[in-house]
Image (cartoon, rainbow, N blue to C red):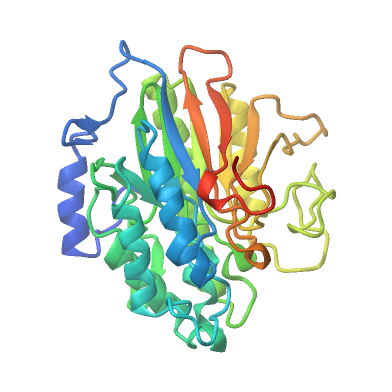
Length: 375
């Protein structure tokens, strides 16, 4: 059982975040008439859009993602979330679009997010910070790149998009930056129509415990912060009477022993990794399992990372029994060898009055169909 931590009393590290704290203190998450729809009496059905692991090539950056954005904008969505990885894992020499961890790459992605009609959210992925220290990515300091993302993407409590949504922000100075402890401003939470949502900075490459320049101190601080944010999210969902919780992060942490080609192998009962690699996920997964069991209502965990669209129920309890209320959702992601193949998105219909709350509808962007072109 993961112990809860009281993070009250931690100092706020920056003036920008202090201003954000004032903005979110009201608990009324809304801007331009679009905000916290959880009025408890008006839980009307709505739809959201999920995508990630894009773009990975010039074709995807110049054609595939613009097609995807146009397709999403043709739907009536309450909001969208990109679940991390704004670029290919290592820079591509000769690319006409930015593929290293240069400032230009982040600005390109900011443009995509702000081109979406609906409020647009984002959570960082390993390709856009943890792996930036690879020589092929420019040999950056990965922690400095995460600080840059925090300043560029997360300096206010608002989403991106042509319509914005105010979110709650993790303001406690629990995470590490180049200059020491800083607020984990990339971790966000919001409630719409009787369902509570949260993003958490849980990244691939062993959650920063492996790859070119692992950073254990950074991992341990952020992992603690993520667990606190996870627990507070479920606390808020219970307090609001939310019908379900959806969590969004980047990493595929691995869930059992069945998928060695796409995720870490782990004992599904203990959640311990079994392949001898550094385990950046076991404690977090244990806390997630505890919260899902305690919540009892539907819990969806959305991630990218391994580029394989699927919806399944891989989480077991300590006795080996499948958690019926837990669903893993992996979004579409790069299939670079086949151009725009898999540059698609997932539409989720949400109805807080229904038994399972979430209904999943993959959206194959007609202009991006590769193997079997649209009729």
